[in-house]
Image (tube, one colour):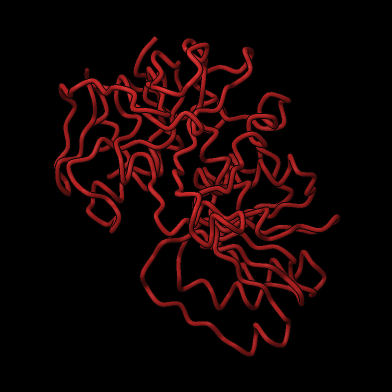
Length: 340
């Protein structure tokens, strides 16, 4: 079969790979579509401490089950599915308290084990979520990034009437915007330094957009909230140096959701946290959010196809990587078509 493999940092190619078989409890999925994520780029750069090379990457994908392993209902062959990449042990403390997305022995499909940039991939049967017949497979391939948005919003525990500031209007920022709107958050402010991204955010339902390069973000947020500050802040830009500003922009009792994986230290002003009794939460991957996201997409409350800027064949992936490497401002989600 054909697959995109990263054999070492900055070394990758599309070539022949052995076709996988389904182990007990697994299914084999013929991949239809897979999305290229920023974390795939981190693997290519050698910036992901969890990956072992060589690795077939890709954790955003959907397709059709073509084989099942021992212990899996044979009736699942032919099922159209999207794949939750979080594989957990079920035994450790996080798993025991219902937080499998931070399992002590977690594996991520496309990071710790081979992923979806291949014609076929074997995955645990429990991670393959059936999608409605009316849901297109290209849209289903993007359930995973929306699950990231669902997770961080869940961690911030929105209250009715809360306003939300989304920092960064890249793909994750746009999924947070759409998910917030689907959950009934009516006022969502989005900030970025690229007007093209802010235009997209406005089209997808942002109540206000702020260019942080040309406008004073803190002053604009305070003006929009009558000086009170904002209850919810989702950091989709993942710039550690912005934490002090987020602490200042948050209102008393506000919640800040952090998504970045940077090892760079942040300046945390304890006074700001304590005097406002702020809550800072980390959010990693997703905690069983796939059914929720699939339901939102099926009901028309989310529009994954609005995120897709480019569609390429598997053999064209090296060119797509070059685009994302050198002209990221020209792309939103690059979707790879792998099989009919």
